[in-house]
Length: 66
Image 1: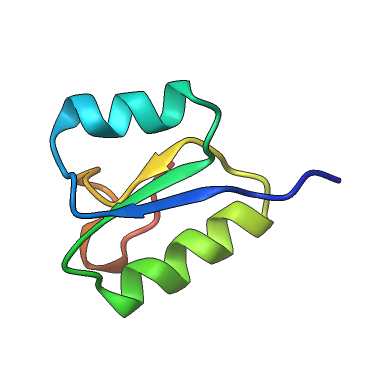
Image 2 (image 1 turned 45 degrees about the vertical axis):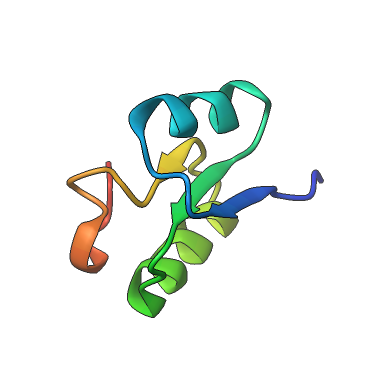
């Protein structure tokens, strides 16, 4: 089992997200943090879905990304 790594940063540009994910992180969250997004991200991460960003349109407002 590997430990999930989630970037939490104020850097929210698309290239910042890409850099985080290409560096091997499992997800990227940007400020301001939305607790519902954090809960959904943790749920997805522990169910085995990876490479997620809080900037994804499907992820916003707690919607599950596919």
